[in-house]
Length: 170
Picture (cartoon, rainbow, N blue to C red):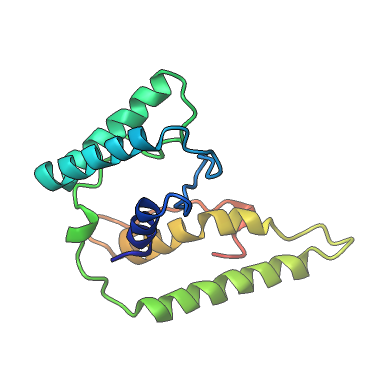
């Protein structure tokens, strides 16, 4: 059972314990109608048990869309027209040592921060913006390790533009 599921289970047994909701939804609002809330949760649980996760996911997205249409304050749906056709539970095994790669990413980010900090000495007016690299580091990591092709690739290599301020990290 995940931490989120444990938290949901605790909060459903004890309404005084609120589960954490993030990304724009306040967690301190009082439940002014616990019976109605419980009816909604029971209905959702029954639908999930009867129809499965795919249906539950679809209905939740439709409810969020409807809430936005009706101008109810809900977090943004961060999505694009591109749909991952492989659900997370069916993704292939990661072909590496995730812990080692996590540590390497941390070292690379630290190194980029030190390089930018060192280059930004007063009077030199060189360097970069570490936030530029930090905000794109995961994209670069995935691109370099899984998508970008070198010049020897049969179809030709990829040309990649790296914004100057992000170059210390790359």
